[in-house]
Length: 113
Image (tube, rainbow, N blue to C red; front, side, top):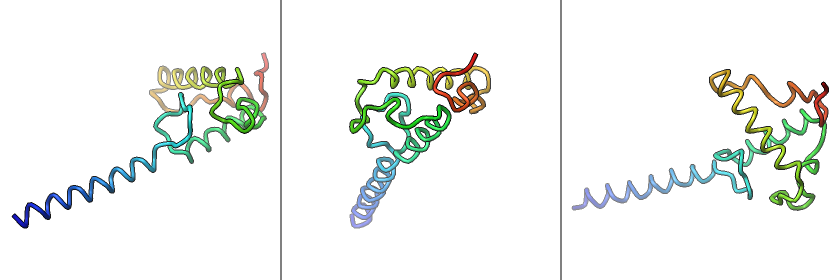
């Protein structure tokens, strides 16, 4: 009986540790539709990459003071572009990130040509 109690206690403890790790990796940011399953830090890095690729800053796509808002139409355009890039990498490069925003944008909000 003592062995069973110790076994159950070990299961409960390890389940709590695993749940804690999983929740630490999930984003706590609101209204995430494309970058799902990523940590807050990974989402921030991706946003910085996109900002550099377009030569802009956060408020180009986000509402100042309310990053979860969908009020700015450029945010939905960014989501569609991210989905397009992901699809091209999946379809042509087996999911490897060969294509990215800078390939066309080259530091400009509107690609040339």
